[in-house]
Amino acid sequence: MKALTWHGKGDIRCESVPDPKIEHPRDAVIRVTSCAICGSDLHLYDGVIPSMKSGDVLGHETMGEVVEVGSGNTKLKVGDRVVVPFTISCGECFFCKRGFFSGCERSNPNHKMAETLWGHSPAGLFGYSHLLGGYAGGQAEFLRVPFADVGPIKVPEGLTDEQVLFLSDIFPTGYMAADMCNIQEGDTIAIWGCGPVGLFAIKSAFLLGAGRVIAIDTVPERLELARQAGAQTLDFMSEDIYDAINELTNGRGADACIDAVGTEPETKSGFDAIVDRVKVATFMGTDRPHVLRQAIHCCRNFGTVSIVGVYGGFVDKIPMGSAINRGLTFRMAQTPVQHYLPILMERIQKGEIDPSFVITHRAPLSDGPALYKTFRDKKDGCIKVVLKP
Image 1 (cartoon, rainbow, N blue to C red):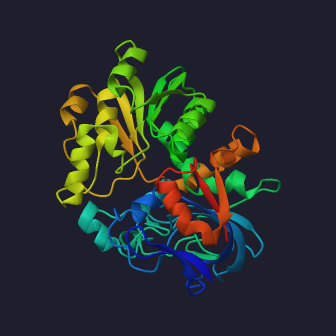
Image 2 (image 1 turned 90 degrees about the vertical axis):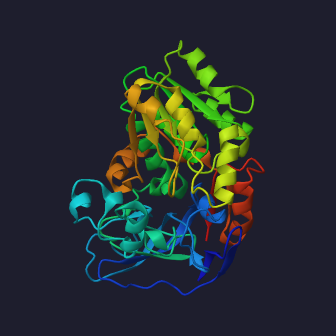
Image 3 (image 1 turned 30 degrees about the vertical axis):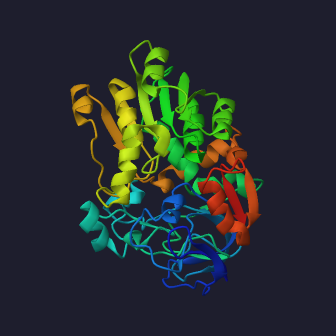
């Protein structure tokens, strides 16, 4: 089959790889009908995430049609249309039983590697390094889905691929970002990053009762979509974000702040961001937490900082003195997608949201390597790429 594979920093290829097959009775194999390039895939493209191997198949936003089912899987049948969560979860362990599917204790075969870096291992993920299981991803013609009686959700009749594809990751992630803010009616929520996750966080914040959303970015197309979603926008290249948020909130700060950027902010966003980049380039640091620092300072006393942008290792110069003296709450996670799927599928069916609004580029799988670069460089108005294998 054809798939997008990683061969080093900035080197993504569309090439032939072996077809997946059933390896466990609970497995399923799907024929991929739609997949997407995620903002977190760009961390792989940029060589930020460790333990990638040449030839690894990428992709964790995937849906398609079931073509084969393991003997122990009674949930799915051949012909079912399904969306596949990016988190791989057994459904039976301590964490899965409590709804914390992204903390699954059984799905990362390389858990020892993760424990060395993080203390404990999270769940395995599709197409996202051997640190998280080394699973082949879904930017491919076919995908093997482990624990397929737990993860995939069947797509109701009448919904298109583009309406439901983002249930695999970015819609639940954006929704969780807002959900973790404990939004009270009329709250002001500040969101850093108007990429796809940030845009879903804007929509979700309003769905959950926010009175005002302040969205921060510098890319004109992203800022325009944020305004269309109802947000008030700030361009960090033309104004001081701390001063602007203070002015908009009468000096109090935002009720909650969402970091939807993570480890790779725009270098020009501040002097500390430049220092972070130098430290990472010289192996003196692993992450660039400029946005996290700014979100802490812009949050009101006893507010919440919600973190869904990806960080890989250790961050420094975090203003913990500010956080502890002002009573901030930190919430963060890889999204337990399975927890949110029924809620969000229902919102789509009711017409409360059409997730396809973020799509700007549609292309065959063979165009994937070029579109990785377009997406990374924020060229051609690229906000979200959907690939059709």
